[in-house]
Structures are given as structure tokens and as C-alpha cells.
Image (cartoon, rainbow, N blue to C red; front, top):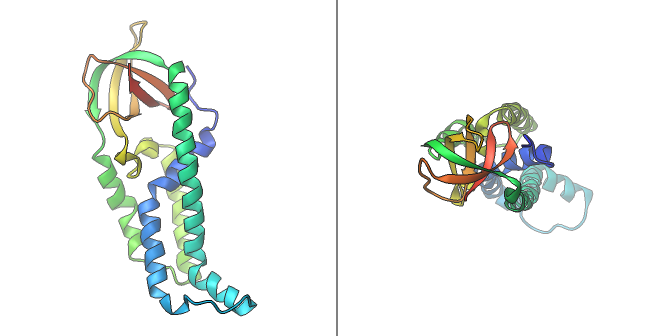
Length: 201
């Protein structure tokens, strides 16, 4: 069974960006509300373009990145849904719900940024620098599936499972079902190191 999907590198980035969509939306509203006096058409002049980049460039970049990531996330999960038929049928031995970790993720990684103004180049640089550090932590941990946006349609469970050959293993799954029980059978498709996309068999 493969440990990585074909688009794994892209998947990491897409999942990371979508996990920060709540923060990005708040930043966009904050920056636009603080600079409403600049929201008028002044013509295609260099000075006006410079004002737009200074006052709304950061928000525009976040909006574009978020939109592309949402499309990428939709394509990614469509790909998972197609490939799940190539997955492995396993029997659940133990199940632990991990949905509550999205709350901790919001408190730890999103709320601290909300109170920044992002009106200076230093604040914007600091934001991207910290986001890069968090990204490196994110892709090397099970935070990859801890995503507040995905929690609207999916649930996350830590499982111990038994393969058809009798071997017991463990991992983290993301599945559309809100409840799964021990001793039930599911199909898992590997999307990372001990990370799986799953559905009930």
C-alpha cells in the first residue's frame, strides 16, 4: 500500500491554506474596514496602484490564494474518493474521536493573528515568516488533517485496525461519517504517514 498520494506535496499546501481560511477571511474584513476611505476608483495611475497595493495588496493575495486552495482541496478530495476503491479493507479494533482538536488548532494557530493590523511591511513579513514556520511543523505532524474547514463535512478519528493478514496497526483517518464503531469494517486509502482517507465498507 502506498504511503503517499501522487499529489502529496500539493496536498500538503492546499490543506494548510484551507485550514487558515477563517483567519484569512477575518484579516480581509479587518483590512478593508480599516481602509474604507481608499475604496474608490481613481483611475489607472501609478500612484493609485501603489495605494491599492499598500492598503489592499495583502488581502488580495490572501483572497486569491484562498480561492485557488479551495478549488485544489475540492479536486484533492475528489481524487481521494476515486482512489478509495484501491484502498484496503480493515477491521476497527479501537476508535477515538479527534474532532475536538480543531478547537485547539483555532485557539493556538489562528486567534493570535486576529489582533494584528497588517498595515506595515514588518507585520506582513512577520506573518509570512511565522506561517512558514507553522507550515513546516504542520506537514511533519498529524495536523495535516486537523482542519476547521474540513470539519463541516468530515470527521477525524484515531484508530487501531486489523489488516486482513491479522496484523494490527494504527493511524489517523478522515471520513464523511460522524460516527464509527469498533469491530466495524472500513476501507482506508493512505494519504501520508499513518494518515488515511476512509469510508465505510
